[in-house]
Length: 349
Image (cartoon, rainbow, N blue to C red; front, top):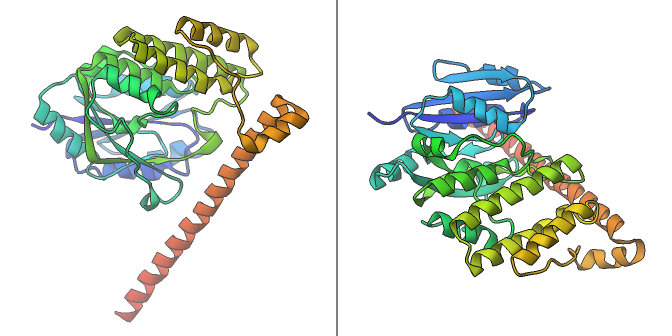
C-alpha cells in the first residue's frame, strides 16, 4: 500500500489565498493524502473559507494565535502520515509534486533521505513563475547543502514546501521552535538536514512560491522582537552547520552570512552588532559596516545612515506594492479575458 502523506498548512490572515492553496493540495495525483489546516487565530475570513473544504480527508482546526511554529507543531501532533508535506497558506504545489518525490523516495529506500524540489517565484499568476536553478538544486550531503546555502549567496535557500520528509526523519529533527518569529523554517530544516543522510533533488517536482514583500513572515523590519528572534535563529543555524563541518570553508560561509545579516540590526541594535562582530572575530574575520548601494550613498552623505536606510526600506516596500498591484491587475485582466472567450465559444456552439 502506498504511504499516507500529510499535507500540513498553517494559516493566519490568508483569506485571499487559502482556497487556492487547499485546492492545490487536493489536486495532488498522489492518492493517499490527508490535509490539515491550522488556523492560527486569524482575524479575517481564513477559517470560514477553509471550512468550506472540510471533508473526510481535509481537517480544519482553529486555535488562538500562537505563531507559525506553534501552528505547525499542532499540525504535526494531529497528522498520521508516513511522509510530511509542509505548505504555507499562500503557496501552491504542482499536481504531481508529491507523486514524483514519493517515487524518488521509493527508489532510494532510505527513510532518512530528505527529498527536495524546484521552486519558482510568482505574485498573482502562477503561470508566470520563474524557476531559476541554484547550486542547491542537486543531490547533496547535509554539510555541503548548508555550506552552499551561505557560501554562494547570503539569501540562498529552499522554500518550505519543496521538502518531502519521512515521519522517521521528522521525529528525529524535533519540533518547530516557537521562539522564532521569523525564519523558523530555516532553523527547522537545518535540524532536519542534520538528522538526514543527505538530500535527493527531484527537479521535475515543482512548488510555486508567492512573493509577499514586507508582509512575509521572514521580514525583520525595525521590530526589536523580530531582530532578537532573527539573531537567535541565525545562531542556532550556525551551530548546526559547525557541528557538521567546522572547516575553513564552512567558517568563511558563516562569516559571509553574518555580514549579510548585519544590515538587519545596524544601526538600531548596537549590542547585537557588537555580538556579531565578536563572533566574526572567532571565525577569523571582521564585519564591515553594511552599505546601502550607490543610489543611496548621496542620501547617506546628506542626512546620515539611519535616515537613508529608512528611505531604502520605504522605497522597497512601495516598489513591491506597485509590482504586486500591476501583477494583480494583469491577473484580473487575463481572468476576464478567459471568461469572455469561454462565453463566446459557448455562444457560437
